[in-house]
Length: 510
Image (cartoon, rainbow, N blue to C red; front, side, top):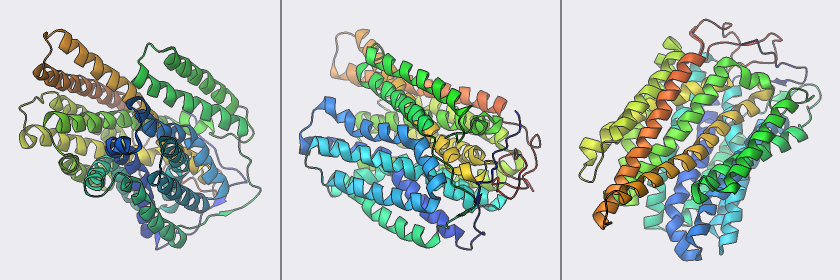
């Protein structure tokens, strides 16, 4: 790939390294956890919310879809706003807005009010998530510390879904479904205080770049159409004209966005960011991991609750060993393995482990036990995801000029969101088809046949996710550069002090 040169006179000057940067990490991690939690914690509250507010099964999906549509379609805009308005300011605005939207949703007295609050959560989450990652990118400039910080951040990003299941079950069973939303207010208050004290404010030199309005409209429309198209496929099926209409519109708008970025004076997303081979590999890996994590959490949750009759709290507890292995692997990977082997080894290794774990899950049946049959594959998956996420996240933002750190970080979240949307639609469709075919071939239908059909449908989804991870292993092995092929990481953040192109391996081995 050609060298990138994104440094300009309008660059942001980095604040000096602060001894409080580890408190910055704690603040950012708390905000990231809040955003990731909200993707799963509300799912557990849905049945109770449906009874309380009286909305139909058909309307229920909009509680989830409203959030994902706003979040997915506005991520790149949120990332660019953090570059233009300042990361500290954008971070605090995102936190306050997310907390306000959560309080509105918790107090909702109608279905429409709850859907509106969820859309607002998604919009402010689209500001918050990329800004949190950009703050890390610009705060940690020492390679070894940067690796450690991204290891923690990656572990939270990977484990947040399981934590959401546990927290959602606890709050729903012991309090009320509304507390799944109210809890964000308390988390946000702590994070706002931390951000005000510990997050540094970079100083800008030169005139402020303008926002790329045409590019923003094109990419927001494309991402909205893409997420809505896959969401519609999940609920209405792949034969729905609306599904293909929106997916086609997404393709056309994305092509228009790419063409515009090549000629825009102030591009929303400089193409050099995504065309860099290492970063392209990182974004692809995050997308595949996002689709895979959806398969793990959704179908294992269904299996534990519907087939083994676990309570929501028991289901959340069942994922804790996976979280522990994910965090352990993330720390080992970023502090020992990635500096030694690089992402070209570690990401394919993690993908391969994850594929093995998914194949292991295909053997589950109605007589399986947790200790012998569920726990081992979850631990394998945890170690695999802990090897994928930190290395990919570090690489995705490495070597990018500081003034584009926000939008480069937004691409990480966009990749994860699109991966989750694809996984939602595709895996649900495949599982539903497998269940229907199983019942049709085991007539007459009965409760026992229906139970077996459900387990069979989960296994079908596991096989497909195993295929995703296997493909990811091959793709990442081919795309990531070998260590030493790029320029030495003498300036890991792409600081404005240098006008030279920066292109390097993801974690310095100095």
